[in-house]
Image 1 (cartoon, protein in one colour):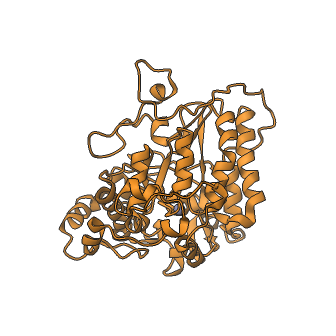
Image 2 (tube, helix red, strand yellow):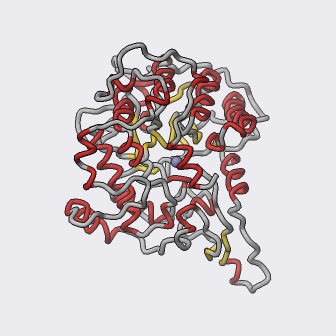
Length: 423
Ligand SMILES: [Zn+2]
């Protein structure tokens, strides 16, 4: 999916009838989180509304869906950027604009040894630069699924969030700054419902293609917008399309953001026309869990709250996932991140508390874990932890164009074909 159609899709009113919950009969209050959360007509949900705190701060933020830069006169952003600038690894932005913004890395020359730990090239999650933690793609506890959704807040997510509430299920939500700006009351609902909020950049472009300042601003202004709207500053993020390298990692780390990736990809963003494929991706994960693939560590699958289809797929497979895994948990809970935000007063349980194996009574955010631990002694769990990503990469055209026959040192140079997949 090209980026233009992606935006069109995002900005289109999304029909959520498949979740088939009745519309609210009460008068519509579009000034509070509670009021907005009761609206179940997607046309109404997705129509614009006024929210004075955001409207009044419009000049303090980049334009929606445009690559962020530090705004003139923004002394706080400038000071922060200057304070971290020396920490940013000296790697040039990859590709040429505007193509690279949409993942077209055609013509890029890159060392096949993957010196930058560039995920888009190699799915690398272990930085080569010292002092930077590995990206989180698997989880320390066995047989758990890090449960989360990208690209929100979706303006028509009320029925889906209601469903999660009905299951007492918390998730990690990766929010786009421009979406938070446009639908602030929907963003507030995530905190009200107990979900964990992470950053998913301001304008959802390929981060490795941006300058240092742009990449900083994409993260910084999303953090500031979430703080303005929701009142908290996240400490985690996920790069759009998974496009990260060691330069981007140093910027995120300097902003105290933990990078959350994934091992499995639902490919749900491909849309309703790919329902069979998406169903198969979910079932592969479920089968892998049933076969004992995660007997020593938990995993994460990439899924979205992007459209009615992606949310409906999540609903469709929820019970089977909950059955196949011991627990579906927010990523922060799996990592024992008890203070998920910069601000005091917001806590997540440890995993032990969440799963009931810890001491003391806890405010367990989810009792959903169907602990069906009856893992068969599987041998057919052939869905390796990276197969989804591998498929993704091969579909993307991130092909390793031939680099042989040029001499013994020439294997160091690889050309990357266009990478235009959507994550
Ligand atoms: Zn995304």
